Length: 115
Image (cartoon, rainbow, N blue to C red):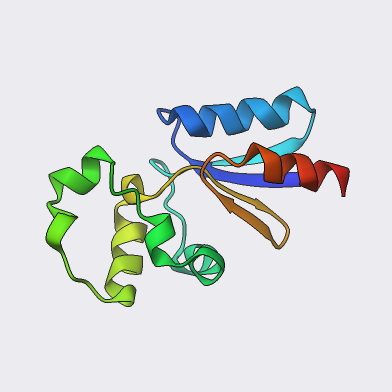
C-alpha cells in the first residue's frame, strides 16, 4: 500500500495524517502544496467524489484574506482558484489508488489497511 498526501507542513491535520501512516509503516508520497500545487486534474478527482464545497476550507485564514465569504464563482473558477491558492483547500487530501479522503479521516484509512 502506498498513499499520496496533499497538504502543507503547517497544517496540524496534514501532520497527523503523515504520522498516522508512518506509525503503520505505510509508504507515503507527500506533496507540499506550498512548493508544488496540485493540478486541476488531480483536484477534479476529489471534486467528482466529494463536491467542490467539501474541498474549500471556509475557515482558513486565506479564505478570509481573499474576501471570498460572499463570492459567487462558477465551479471552473473555483477549481482554478484552488490550483492557484492551495491554502484554500481542506487538508489533507489523501489518495490511495482510487480511494480518496478529504480532511482527517482515520477511520477510512484504517479500513484501507484492513482491505
